[in-house]
Length: 175
Image (tube, rainbow, N blue to C red; front, side, top):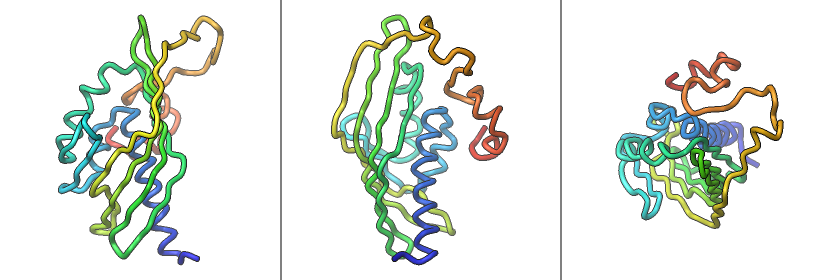
């Protein structure tokens, strides 16, 4: 049974990986960068391999063609040894390109992470993406079907409703 310190560390690591999802989906690149140590490496396979700064510089170009993305964490397993940790994070990432001719790309995979706790804060030290499956299809336009009528539309950036409705989130990221 983990002690309370282990549970606090595991919760901090879980929040780190969830914050990564939020930061990428809101295109909050300053927040993305804050999640990595200065000497961290991100490895997205043949798409990208490099430092945290290089990764954050690469992201806007990749996401520019996406109308929306939703990164979700499923299973998150962590092993902690002192101020080092490793995690296997199961994730699903949804990507929708812009109309006309919008496409949906859904990726199922895992992040194989190494973390370090420095100055009392956990951050990514090395993040590797493993692709388990992917699916691409034409996107249905449900806007005329009345689906979600009255609900505000989510979007990348600080105009997303989460920044207006959840006031605490204004100080959470770089917004």
